[in-house]
Length: 209
Image 1 (cartoon, helix red, strand yellow):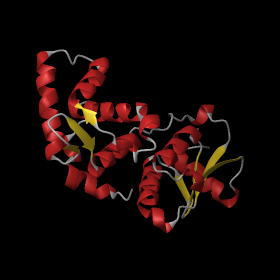
Image 2: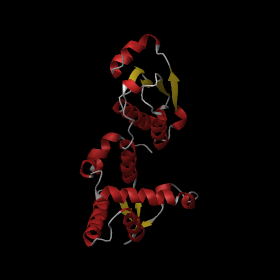
Image 3: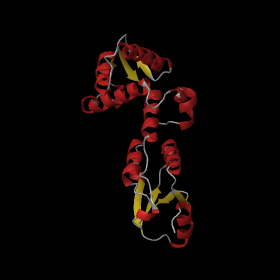
Image 4: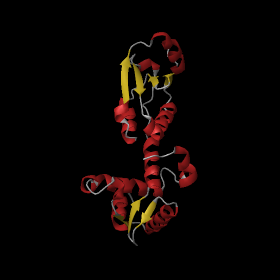
């Protein structure tokens, strides 16, 4: 799935979808329904092409909170219309809909944004460096750019073009990121006790004496 991160904000109105909004909850519920239906739709095509209905979605959101509140139900209908207007979902009839490529991109962006590394304290550091190496082919350029941007956001130190380092525990989070972007086989994390001539600069970057 070729997705350009710059398009999320301009084309799909990402700036208007708050992380805790009902719209976000709806997208999360769509994601949850799709994950639960994974085995059933595997032979029918891509995961998110499974039809979903207002009723099924409402039941899922109800499990997440106060959907029974009349105001929430009204907001729910408005949010669905908003998602349709932004072309994040597409109705097949008056009740059933699918997630569009734009909707898939929004969910992917949410998943990436949610990835954080544990807080770091030099006093409790285990004296091990986590060295991240990746070799992502040109055919996956969009995923490679998203991966590199997220690595920089997580404040890894750049040793060279595709080699980064951090003192933080990070294997679970980075491999989750690689899985989301479908580049797991191209990403590797090593542990090292020394970084050679680069160590002084890396220690200064992370405030480690």
